[in-house]
Image 1 (cartoon, helix red, strand yellow):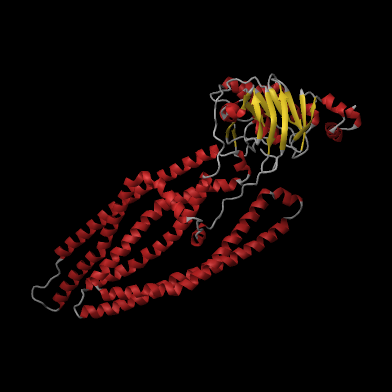
Image 2 (tube, rainbow, N blue to C red; image 1 turned 60 degrees about the vertical axis):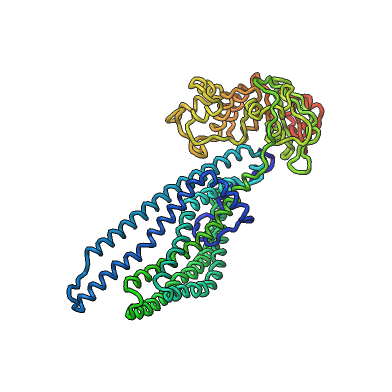
Length: 618
């Protein structure tokens, strides 16, 4: 809407390769404050969270008890077999007792699974409700943000915060919270069980942890560098592909295909090298940890075997201890991964909260209702600037109801800015704008904006049927009203030539109809809305001459009996305007009818003469 070109929306940050992004772990600027704020969204679900904690603890406790009970069954089996082998009178394997132990074990695992199901069920509800609340707050915030917010940021950046960042929060709540609780309980529980079996074997098992950390730390540092290179070159590749895709016609027109391919190959080669090194070096970590773990396993087996021969420990307990040793490293690794994920999640939450903290539109102070405007518009000493420097100074305009006002001037003169102020997309620095004598700041934005209808040079149609797109202009519009509006806009004929007529579905970019047809549909939508004041940006600059005639006829019908503001680039289209405002550098430097401005032989006359020959002027 502004005179400045809005930054193009790029792809969401990161692109493919999300797994590597997690390893990098984008860090938040203020972890504690953001984390506390995120917890406030969980506060209404405190009871459910307590249920999740209890279910996670009970599920883990029952699971941890499993190896110890299994060891009891193994001991029973071994002792019976050993006694029988030694020829002890009456010695036999007590299958009944073993069966009871296994049934008890199966019961524990079933109960553990039920509690695990319960915690996942509760946590999924908590996560989705929290994400729902976040999306609601963000959606309401987007409705309250001023136009300058959207003008100053890429569309892709805002979309990434609304979708990717909130999805990251939801995924972490769903998976990582329960995993973190389970991991902590598992570590503590396994450590207790290992100590009850054998403090000596526990010491041997724990020694492997600092050794593993010492061994993999330099590898982690080195791999981080290559992962950073991988993400940087991935961003370069994404940017290059996007540019080549969106501008493929320009690339072909200038014969730069080979240069584009060479640039792609160069960046792709760098990405390959960085990715290969990152994956290779990080791939060393797991084998090294397994090697150290296996050494620990061998030591435990040797020492455990000696203890068994000395009757200091049962063979079943050795089996249980080895199982616990295998299980012990997994929750530690999982906790480390979760800590990294939490960093990324809080960073994502921080980005969402930054959006929620953006300055909103000035709150309405509604003292007047504008039910049906007559169309009188007055600018009184209006000052405005996008920054500290004023673009418009002391603008004064008086438009009577039913007048057609044309706004002309060079690029950057302030034509579109004037329309933005009229619609109150931006707030004034000084002065007032009145409609039917009422200050626009004293009426609701809804009343103000429903007073206007807009047909812009850049058409906007959404994915859906033509009927739905036309009905967007008026809530509850009937079929007869839609068809009548289409006929007024000269759109009915071409709509009926389409295979499905008014039920033809437009795709996302509405590229399955021509530019001129899209413009006729937007005019028909404005006709259906039937506003008392019309704003018409030059709508014929990108269509052929025949279509331009149809659009001009439709626009003339649309302006009948209405106050109309027409932004004109082709001066031949506004000869019949009741008032022509000539703008330059934010000021109205001339105003009058076409003939009066030509007679004045000023700025307008120079503009007009630059478009037409002397013969046409005469």
